Length: 352
Image (cartoon, rainbow, N blue to C red; front, side, top):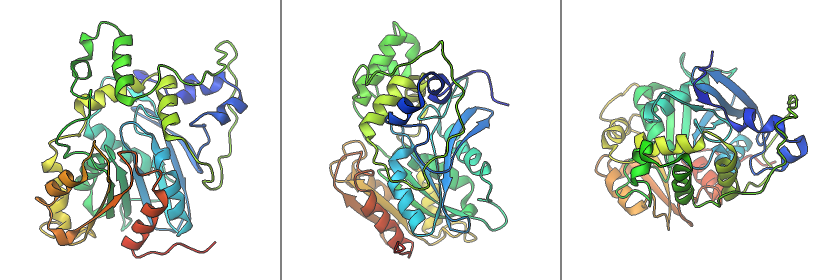
């Protein structure tokens, strides 16, 4: 079913050529989270994780442009412990999801990936009265807003962490000519070096003993039953840069076509629902938006983004929380974020 015009993820290009022991020691091991599955689609194969009580209220997580879905691992487990069913997936060109070619890495590509993730579930997430909440970070913010704007009746609540879409000034390097006209790069290495500078990673990370002439059959691995492991987000970004052969293209194309700036219309459509101006048939109608920011975030500046959201949404429909850290604030603040989300939804952590 999958198109041949894609760049395969490390699940195909790396894992069969290293030992099981070495794979388990990587920054992003192939069985990192509970409930892993690889879903074949017409864009390529994507990695999805789903676990938690089958009858629990459902929560979908959508990550940002640099770090794959492991950034939500602790928050997701916290919600599972409170009785929720969670789903995480790697966006195209990140983690263990392929890089599709011959299509723009724009908001429509990524928003449609949400549909591909939820229809792969053995449970019904949409239709016939089913609904779910979304927790999204950075680039995942406008991706989720696009999805919510198209399917508002399927959404119970929306929580955003350092959301993009209203960024006034792009991070250093994002407006570089090579990021918008990669065909002008004198070599693939020049584009790779530009992306490396933006990501702030080393030219290469820890070496792996890759045996291309000794492909092994990958056993069906049982992932953990719950998240216990701590992950190194910087190490994951380095691993992805080193070992995902499509990541450079996906990252560059997302910078070029992705919904990072000037998405007021996208934001406005959902804010109209939350404010009670439209769609009285939905749970989001006359509700509230919860948004977290890092106090020292210079990518998504909290004060600026809040000011722009308030142009679209009355203050009594917005709850803003500030946490320590820069743009990478979600992972180190996972416990506080989980507690705030549960309080926002009127839930309590179960006592184990």
